[in-house]
Amino acid sequence: MKANKKEMIVSALKNGTVIDHIPSDKLFEIVDILCLKGLKQQITIGNNLESKKLGSKGIIKISDKFFEKNELGKIAIIAPKANISIIKDYEVVEKFQLSLPDEIEGIIRCANPKCITNNERDIVSRFDVIDKDNLAVRCHYCEKVMNKEDIVLI
Image (tube, rainbow, N blue to C red; front, side, top):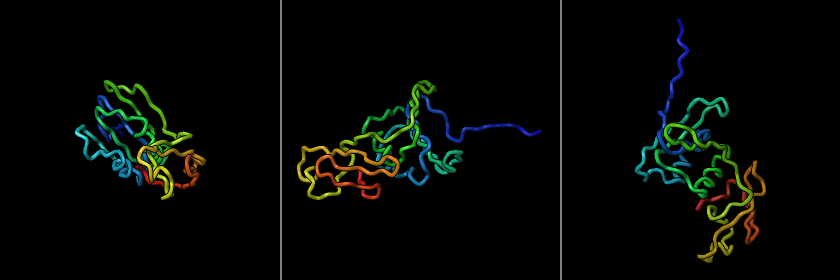
């Protein structure tokens, strides 16, 4: 007799946030940009897990951590199709797929060394997203267009 048994590879979370459907090759980039190494909360990281959507995926579960808008923006730049689940008392209270916003503010550095955002301390970088599929942005101030490979997160 064959048992039809499903097991959770990564344990359940009581309260916190789950970032799921991260492309496996982007998982540790997200760990770095969110500065997860310094957190005191319990963090569970799984990589190269089986995924019908991606083939293989990464997942991050963080106890008692709920992300701010700018943190979600950073994740969206690296893994724009990742899912975010907010967990309270072991229940998913909110779930959504990340997507790039129309405008990105304060999380990307302009590649133009002469841009005002690189020369004035009080000016926050601001970019219009001009291609969400291939990730291309245009600086609001100097109009420099940057592709995914040019983007540097602050």
